[in-house]
Length: 354
Image 1 (cartoon, rainbow, N blue to C red):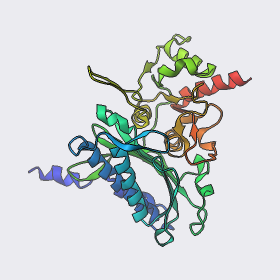
Image 2 (image 1 turned 135 degrees about the vertical axis):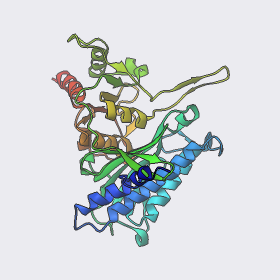
Image 3 (image 1 turned 180 degrees about the vertical axis):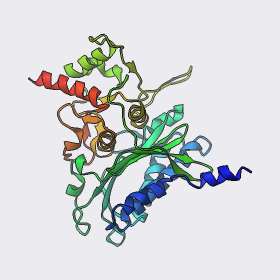
């Protein structure tokens, strides 16, 4: 046995150690936030395990129901939602939960109520699991105004008031990306230890990228600014190289018996954009004038992470984190990614409104 190597393995920065280090910077902290995050991490580990053996455990396929979005629920959708609801409630630190899978917000019983609100998509892009594409969990955390009298108004606040946000991607490895308002860090699950280890410290998105990510199948329905931006990506007028298109959101699986079009896997596209730079776009169009992505548990958390990493997020009208939702499942367009790339499309929208 290599004792030196084994000793080195004990000096790893785990997510628990990282969060405790952050907590120590706030002497007034009681540890509630740390406990909440530990329960979210536990939920991610459980879902990662379920995803890895979904085919063997007969978790692939439809559950026979539709969620509030009108989408057919997968068995893993239902399981993941139950896992996170139970994990968050049992933490004793939450008061309101908003899930993509539940039509109404969940108000925690007073006896186990805390002061945090968590909005989450338990399994984003779940239909992609049948064709082996990365999927993930997205979450955002807010502070309630009065934990003894929580209301929906506590949930319907702009994303700039978010305390923390993150996502966990289940793919070739299990990666958890987290920001608590002091930069962005990425952790990878070590299956042998059962711990998330810091592998991507202080993530900074490149100021300008070489990749754009959008579903071009909707191009005929785009507005002028989006169409012009994508045209510039393909045929730049300044003599620079064209950008490359990378879009995991639509995975086409074909066989003699069946053709399946999988729904958007936002986590995988945003993760690549965060690490390599570029822009992720899900614009409004003629078919969906209000956009398709949900504000509270998709647009806000990802926009928060992008800004913390030095990028931008824009709705086509305003900074994404300044948006004030009117309902818990409200949708919005979004353009997020490298600062210069998002700035370019902001300028195109500004020029079009003059």
